[in-house]
Image (cartoon, rainbow, N blue to C red; front, side, top):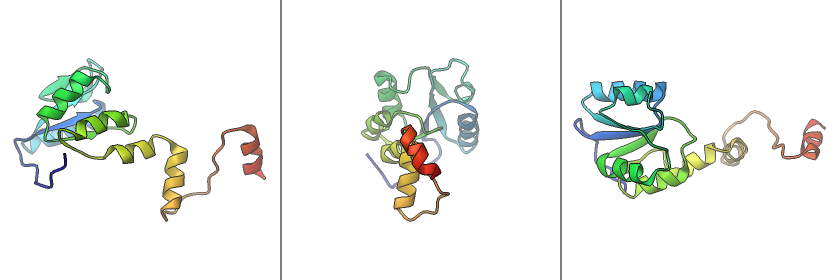
Length: 140
């Protein structure tokens, strides 16, 4: 589900991840009049402490994802290591950004660098090292 309608204050925003960046997101969103639901397994989650609702569950917990998706107008992530499958699940219920495809790319640094280079972005020189032979070839 993807709506282009603006998300007005009063809407509930969701975030997967409850660390310090999530806390800053939560404080800013609440200051602007949004409600915030955080999904994070840590009972002492910094963002969860500031959110309207803290779902203490794993990022792949189906019941928690269902509640998050059905409650929130939009969901984002605090970091890139959230399972892409969880974002796909949420996208069936609400707006999700970044999307699962983008998150899947950045979860593998080799894939990320190759994708960037293949799409015309400047990157520092790099080599994908999967074996000792790859290392020898890169050093040559």
